[in-house]
Amino acid sequence: MAQSISVEELKARLDQGESMHLIDVRSAGEFAAGHVPRAVNIPLEQLPNRVDDLGQGTLAMLCQSGHRAGMACGHLDGVRADVLLVSGGTAAWRAAGYPVVASTSAAWPLERQVRLIAGLLVLMGTLLSLYVHPGWIGLAIFVGAGLTFAGATDICGMAFLLARLPWNRPLVRG
Image (cartoon, rainbow, N blue to C red; front, side):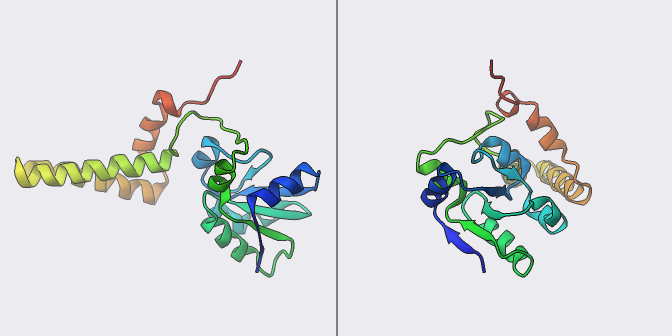
């Protein structure tokens, strides 16, 4: 079982120059929207196949709130003894006022945007089919088929379109 560490303790240890690897197990989109400086992104679903990428030394596991990082620590039980679970994750880090690194201006990760838009389209199609015209059920069917295709192939047309919107483009610094 991994030892739990607060963001305050993590920050203090990093400020003292302690060598540790910060592993953020969120999706690439969530990571790009804001992460703890020096963190490396290894999404939770990739972790079992990337244990050799973790390097030597203490690991501090992060996610948004600590739940997925806890799951990651569970994957590493018996494999690594030097694993710390950062309580509260990136949300606690932000709440403490510590800096984050962001490479997109999106306030929400792309995956969350897809879930919101897909859910709204299914809800709207269903309600319109009930109260306006039965043909609107086609909208809900179309979105359901798109989500099924995305799940089976890992190709999401809606994510592709949403990624092109201005708030999802990389920040330009200069």
